[in-house]
Amino acid sequence: MELSETKSKIIETAIKLYHQNGINNVSIEEIALASEISKGNFTYHYATKSELIDAILSSYCFELISVFDNIDSNAIDLKYYKFVIDSICELQKKYEFLLYNIFQILQESKRGNDIFNNTIKKLYPFGFKILNELNKAGDIRSCDSKEEMKSLIDQYVILTNYGIHMFSSDQNPLEMHQQTMASIITPYLTKEGDKKYKNFYC
Image 1 (cartoon, rainbow, N blue to C red):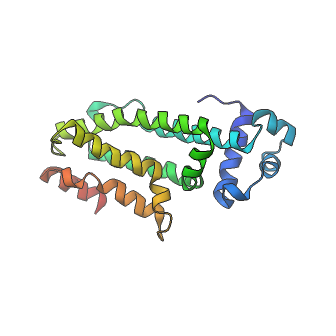
Image 2 (tube, rainbow, N blue to C red):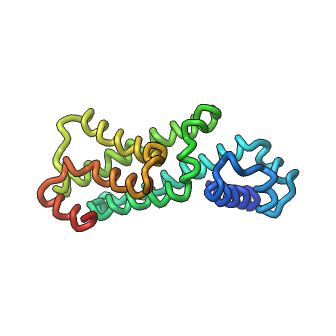
Image 3 (cartoon, rainbow, N blue to C red):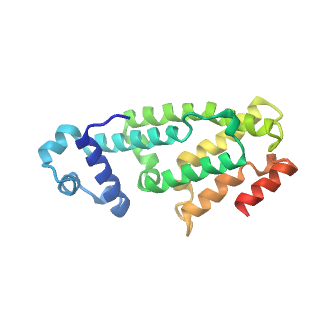
């Protein structure tokens, strides 16, 4: 995702401030000051706070899809599965403030809603590919139907995008979320797959 130097600086600064203080506790003026640009220059790039939030959401979605870019079928195994889960959770840690407020953001922004929903649609082919390759490798059993596999992927998609919000009341929401995401696959593991899985997660 190509952004101008100024836009990138604004987004990086906003992410840092929102992460520290929460979306509702940081003003445009504070972001402009921390970015070392004038308010006029700020509003030239992002006229409203809503536009900035949409841009941050777009950045999150771009980075999320980038986790799956250039998947090599020959490299997909449970080690790669762990890499994907860990990468997603690191990304969610970076954008934790965004995901805590995701329902409010999607309700208030049609553009943000469109960006988010288009990203969700892109996740399914990646999910099918990873699960199919794990099955070919003998690490997981076959799903009984395409609908069952889609249901399995649904769980990952829901946790990827809404898990932080779902576990927000937990003492360690990110840790709980990561463990839950990783364990979705356990009912499908073969004996050999279970041994490999336990090497990574136990």
